[in-house]
Image (cartoon, rainbow, N blue to C red):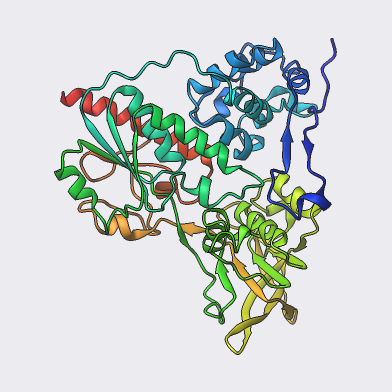
Length: 462
């Protein structure tokens, strides 16, 4: 039987319809489509795809189950190592990880591993669960700071080991970046909440509206009987360009903009009481997934023109190709090789964005060609709102309030190897709080490794 050289297509909402709603863009596979795609997998004796997965899912095994129509078995295989399959199937950059290593990708397109993971998770999400066995409690308390991907992974594994796990979340809803950062049209919040419900069934206690470093400190948790603490607080401190005009009304960090929309429900204003100012012309500065998310949200909130302003070319954009493609389909304009130098205001409000054209020079430390300004190329772009999406750093609140916790020059917590052990005894860390902004699945992998290291250490102590 011949193997198709291309992935089985996945249905999506029509661009002209979806740009006016917050419903999910990608509609997923049907059972027949999933089985068809799963049969493309040649079941390599030495599967390279598994090595590209940060949580080491047995990819050939779960795909084989789908090919046989055994979807519940496929989901069980995934959940052996991945606690958030419905999430990861949607937002992981599989094209850079597992799918990048698929042997079919040498002469054609790789197996659609991410789409199949999403299918298995979605297909089984509402099915009755099998017999649930409560983990046997060992009576030892462990604290987890934050409730994003790294923390959720760590908390799940620690609960399965038998620990009494308490999660401390600063916002009023758990989920971290999965809730406040990624728009509904890419990751439905109902999916995230169902995954978190599974965590609660394991006995994990989630405490919201608790700001570690203010409400209570890591030091106080350790004094109150927590035998270890894992910090997975992410990287929520926005970076700015430090150009004139950034203090004008109408300038948002992408973090604030997306939090207002996703967590606070600004897209349902006035039903929800958190507004977000919407202009006719919006400029989003940056070229990553967050920039795409902000731009696509702005379009859905009624902007007549949304522009992505990025100082390098399309090839250097760090955003997923799928997100760039979807943004282009929806009518978002890409001003590439363009760099802002000043935000122009009038009466305290944004009125324009002064930019220069760029050209690419020699590669910099990241391996991408360095953008260099073209003399005499300045121009002004009319805009009402400017959204800065050039990255984030770890918030120093927790580290500043924790004795003996070392950080590097840009605020990332310093850890030992892959164990997540910090310079403070019995305090571990992982995810964006350590690496800076990265992917959901990498954060989850770090959380799982830290949980294993905590368990090993506490087992040795007892």
